[in-house]
Every structure is written in C-alpha cells, then in structure tokens.
Image (cartoon, rainbow, N blue to C red; front, side, top):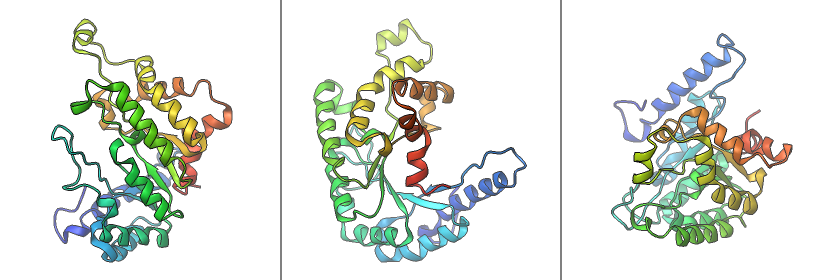
Length: 270
C-alpha cells in the first residue's frame, strides 16, 4: 500500500494512510465492538539521519496519533543462502541511523528490530545507547536454523540462548514470540502431508519460548501472529492454539502479559 509515486522517503505514508482508514472504519462502531489498528507500526528509512524528523511527524499526523512505532529491519548474514533485508552489515551502528534513532525518543516511538541471532549484540548495543527507547525484538530473535546451520541445531540454540541472555540485561528490550519456521523432514512430510498441528508447532517452539520467558519474564514478552507470512506453515487458528499450549502452565498474570498486556504497554494502547 505504499504510494506509487512522489519522493521515495515518503512512499511508506501510503501504508499509514491505508491502515488509518481501516482504523477509522473500526472506530465508527459499525463493525462491532473491536477497535482494529488502534496503534500501528510503520516503516521509515533511518539512514536519512536527522531528515527523518519531518517524516515521522507526517506519519503521526496522518495516522491521527495511532502511529506508535517503526520497524527498520536490518537482518543480515554473510552466507548467501540467508535472505538479507539490507545491503550491508551493522547498519544499526551507522552514524546516520543513530542520528535518526534519537528522533524516536523525542516522539515517544517504540522501535521494532529484526535481526538474525548472530546480530543480537548489535541490538544490545543500541539498547544500551538509548535506554529510554523501548525496543521490540521480532521473531524470537530469528535464530538461523536452516541454510548454513541446517546440520547444527544444538550449536545454534546455544549461540542464540547466549545472545538472548546478554540482551535481556537491557530492561528496555522486549521480545515478540512467533514466526519460527516449522517443517517436517522430507520423509515425514511424505508420510503425513497434512498441515502442521498446534501440538507440532508448540513442541518446536517450546525450547525457545522457555528461554525467552526465563530471561526476559512474561511482562517483557508478547505472542505475535506474523500473518500473513505464518500461513506458509499453519492457519491462524492453529497458530493461536499453539500459543495457548505454550502458555498452558503460566499464571493468570503471565498469560495476560503474553497475550496482550505487554504489547498494550510497549505500544501505548489504552
């Protein structure tokens, strides 16, 4: 829904305009009591440095105050088998990005970070440099489980766990729990071609879930759907049933945090 023309740095305003329209329709009450899109996470190019300030102002104004966070994805790895979202490594440390990042604090915006697990130290450096800006780490911290790491799951898990433990020491960092790919092996897939069940997803995610809750606490963790991308592996209902299975042993307060309260606080929802 980006704008088709105009200055490149303003094209993501089209997305904010579209989501604001959905939010306004929902707020009318004509579609039931739900209030969809009460807050939104958008995209702004942080390589613009201080020039990002009027762009952030435009997003906030266009959204009617619903623009509460940005996601600037910097997932990058040296192996060509891993999809890179940016052209070079360590972009979160670049002076222009840091200059733009300072603006987030002035507007009270949250930062959504997408990095791969070898980059968790970069997110930790950012958190330490800007302790008053909330960071939401997407997708469990994206451990690279395939490609160059397909044959070393135990080593990858240990590397990821170490990075997450270090990151958890920064109280301004929160974690979205979701979006880990789950696949049966080739033989198992041929023997059982049915879609993945909530039990299979919960089993695959549980070790990562337990580390996150142990290190960050439920009040700094939140489940995420990651739809429509997640539907490559399962349906929306199956995903949330898997989350319920993961949280089955949690207290009432912990379930409240995981399924809503953490997100409401970090993204400033009423």
